[in-house]
Image (cartoon, rainbow over all chains, first blue to last red; front, side):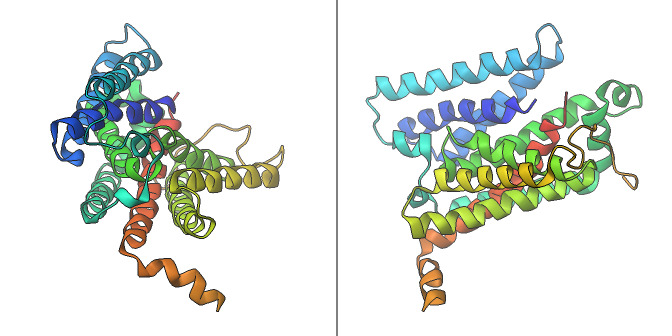
Length: 245
Length: 40
């Protein structure tokens, strides 16, 4: 399922292309597109006829291809193709700050109110469903938060680099802990740290923000990987739910 | 001197906006992806 973030970022590119070419607000157009893609993937996956990776591959790649076709058809009018692919700090405005604040509040509220259901759905969806947890709704909520995070990050990192920002922080946290609750806050702290340090370095080194943030995250991954060694915490153990929940 | 140089980008609004979005988005991305990465 790590592939979902990568896939959704590509799906949202289709919405980015459509909204810029139609002159619709990026956050509204690409946001609606991202939500529709997330719900579509969730719907196809839950049929269980095909695996989730296949559903993600089909829907998101088709959406990305549609974005490319739209740019080619309209000759790239009204939007920066490079900025969409690789990110640009110059495109970030006050509305993006408001958007990420809204996504942060929604994500925090989801964890605060639905932590147990989230935990249960993550570790054992079949038993969770039997126990009365609406796993379809939890999956949809998670995908919506993920789509919101990608949407808010897209202008800084671009479509091609978002995957690293989504996968590296949890991967680093996973090497440091075997507790799911600790992994949640550690991933957030690592992601925030990479964003802060990467943005500052990008200014001083005069390198684009997206690649700098990803390189900071990759360096952190390499350092933690070497520091934890072959016997690093949890390297060979399964992730477990927190005792206190 | 070094501190002044380090703080110089904070004078620009685009940098402040970018920094806030990158930091908060990093946190959100880390959180939301950790749930999907924990799945089978």
